[in-house]
Length: 248
Ligand code: HEC
Ligand code: HEC
Image (cartoon, rainbow, N blue to C red; front, side, top):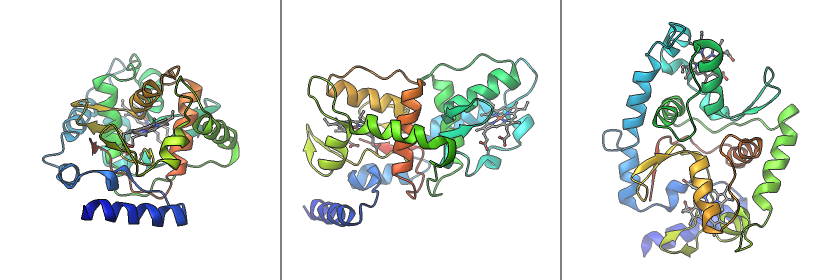
């Protein structure tokens, strides 16, 4: 009960300042403790696998390490993705940048969305930014993508005719089928979700939410999905990166 009161107080403060609040604040203390303990956090298994893949040479003979050095050289990188790519002429997600390196620089096939390997590499890269403020740029050529992402977030859809904002802005803090609705922030992704007993990308979570309102699914990696992620990240700029976060 004390916890619930604390959460409501936090929400009230957040509403006043319109400050972003991490999904972490909406979790039970046991779930928070699991996330905080690097040895117990199940998501760290994917970070470990990511480290193996980082050092594995592909068809070109190069490993990620061969060009980049240790994964810690990418500290800060995950915190600013999705980002505008001048060479691609569009906003790219971190998963896409990893696949651009694989295809373009390692002569390797792109890893499918949702695959263990892509999740492991993105968990490894995101984990290097642990504790850094999320800092996605929305100026210059990314500005239009941001606006399209925001429009998607605010548009009602599905048989239940609800927008992301209807739940994650207007109903944040309320209960829905055993869950406390959070702000729908993405600073913890990829997340280990206890309900799934698995790690998942922001795309997988969004699919779960769209399913809940019986809306048409967004294809992971499609321009709209990347632009939505850009908006979600920018909306939570300043939140500390928690990857891999643990959620209910
Ligand atoms: C019917 C209400 C509802 C709608 C509409 C909805 N969600 Fe969710 N969403 C939830 C619930 C419930 C959860 C699980 C509890 C939580 O973390 O908020 C969740 C979780 C999330 C999370 C994980 C947050 C974290 O900290 O790990 C993200 C991200 C998210 N939603 C994004 C979206 C986006 C983007 C949309 C629109 C496409 C959307 N949601 C639409 C109810 C909804
Ligand atoms: C042959 C060399 C090479 C290999 C192998 C390689 N990369 Fe890259 N990578 C680059 C170069 C060059 C860039 C662009 C440099 C820049 O943008 O600062 C880059 C950019 C990146 C970025 C974006 C950096 C930023 O600042 O935006 C990420 C993330 C990344 N690589 C991850 C990986 C991963 C993961 C692997 C292994 C699957 C990998 N790379 C393999 C050369 C390589």
